[in-house]
Image (cartoon, rainbow, N blue to C red; front, side):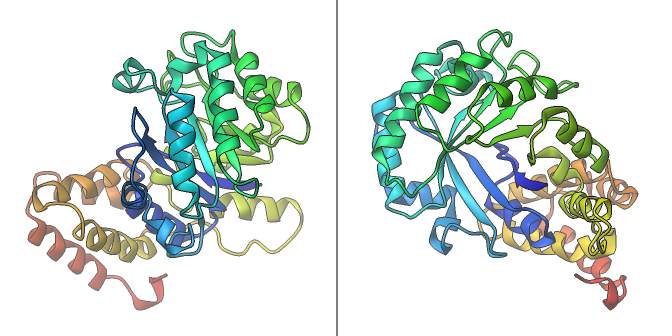
Length: 331
């Protein structure tokens, strides 16, 4: 199985992508969306949101990052994709899945799934605007209010020349509530040409979820977002389970809390380079809020820092925690 790190607006920016890809097991990332409205953005906007473009379109750990565009005007999307293509991205992804109300009200993301023809026009325009060697992929949900047009949208994306399709196995109306309908991803995969890779996304929290998703959807590549934020070692655990099934050596299997602590300290250091002091604590606590659902120690850390917004106090706490773990536990 291949594992892709999903885009998550407001959470999975380049800082957290950097840290999670250092853990290992992730094959590729997709960036948070770059909003395209009625103008052509300068290159500096793309590199500000996706600074990996200045590093061969890779995170510092060497994992490829594919920038994602979101918009509804085919011409403007194509013009911006042409600018982005000059920065040599690993590929260009198109967002037809964002469920955010403000985005949908401005005709972006999942709202477009009620207009399969427009979805196809956007993909085709972007495909024509960029060199053939740059992949153009798309991510969609099953629909807006229901999944009645899921196959129409998937066919439109395929026929427009997309090289890959990721399907979040819920509608916009479903939000992030379980379950994810992986069987509908299978329906889409089986309806499209076998040459078009389909990637399953949604409600993958554990190795068992990943194996079940592969079984139900038939997809060999999975995209995981919140599951990897909660458990940064999940991709390694999935790989270990695959190797075990083949009778091979297990190798790395997840990441323990003592090994994660130095990476958390590095995350904090990186946050300080681009986030104003009054907002830094919120970034760390946001991640800890996910981690505490997997690590008991993260629950204790969250409670210890919950009321603190002082960057110096948090830096001292992280230093004390790192000093208390054996050197052999460091990654």
